Amino acid sequence: MSKEVVKLKNISKKFDMPGKEISVLKNVDLIINKGELISLTGPSGSGKSTLLHIIALLDKPTSGEVFFKNKSFSEAKESQKDLVRKKGISIIYQQNNLLSDFTALENVSIPLLNNGYSLKESIKKATKTLASVNLSNRANHFPSELSGGEQQRVAVARALITEPDIILADEPTGSLDRETSDEIFSLFLKLKTKKRAILYATHNRELSNRADYKLKILDGNIFIKNNE
Ligand SMILES: Nc1ncnc2c1ncn2[C@@H]1O[C@H](COP(=O)(O)OP(=O)(O)OP(=O)(O)O)[C@@H](O)[C@H]1O
Ligand SMILES: [Mg+2]
Image (tube, rainbow, N blue to C red):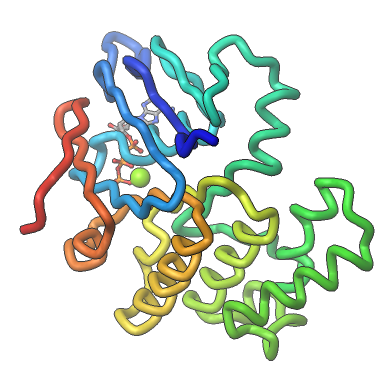
């Protein structure tokens, strides 16, 4: 079986703004394989979030092709993309990750309910997944009753529960202290052994150095970067 999870072929992304055009990504090529833990760095505004959204099939490139598990999604219908977003790809945002009217346990269960699991099955698996991020004791808390790190761990649990092929994390530890970022990062390391791919955008040099390899976006181009 192919190890390839995502392939970007000649991706460009421009935003049309009144009176000017912003060229964010220029002819980007990239292959992500199972089991890889990859960091994504680059100055603010360089296009990290844009790239993650394109990979997640949430945004369309201006030109170029996105493949998920060897299938091109350039001409795909929304319903086909929806299916991949539900089962194959999870995205973790830096903030406002969780639904505020739902408890931690409910937030983690929702992706399974959306995938057609019964309430009972969803709750059972969500309980187990919350335990895997050490949050059993916060299951019935609402997001406003959780610390930033706890909220982020719920978001990680929610990203994991569908057992996706790739997890995209947009500065998942951006607002966390060192100890909590380390905790989130160890969760990523645990996942890596399960043959998933993880791509995380970060401004933190130390965390970025812990990836298998590092990507950097600069002036719309993507490079593989050596440790610094
Ligand atoms: N919907 C949009 N319309 C117009 N311009 C946009 C849009 N989304 C992003 N941009 C622009 O594209 C550029 C890249 O934005 P992006 O959010 O990808 O950067 P980033 O690398 O994630 O930055 P940060 O580190 O600050 O999160 C920015 O200059 C931004 O202003
Ligand atoms: Mg961003």
